[in-house]
Image (cartoon, rainbow, N blue to C red; front, side):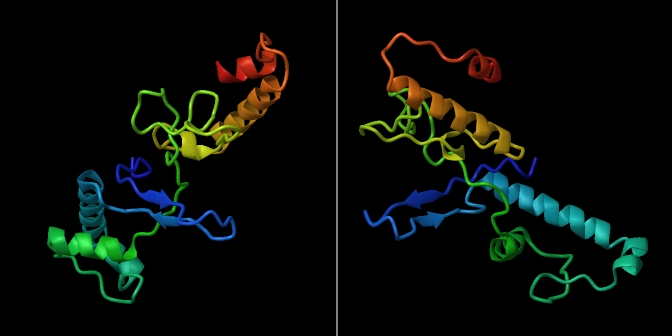
Length: 171
């Protein structure tokens, strides 16, 4: 369940120079649900490592800065601790969400075309409407294949149907 993150970050392009990376703010733990879950994780880990048989096995438990594990932190202290040591360990996604034109957070249409542009498509995990709970590789591969097919079809006379193979994958 910890792979399902509720906090939402931002990606901002500050220049038209493709050599300059975008500004990325993961906004980790900005959602109250994520903070609550980090506190529950801390409390559960504290309970486990305070048990004598595990304490003997593990020895002294420290955080990444070498400080001894504090078993009695308040919620606000846990929040500060988590904010200082949690790092993104998952795939960024849902920054260019796919959706209908009337959806205010949708960036691309069902054919991966960016609204308000011509000739620009996005075909990666950023178009996920919501974050997946597992490794997104297979879904990304299918999106890429389907986008390639859509681009190919857009270059041909209209009226062609998607290939049988892709149609079966998307079912």
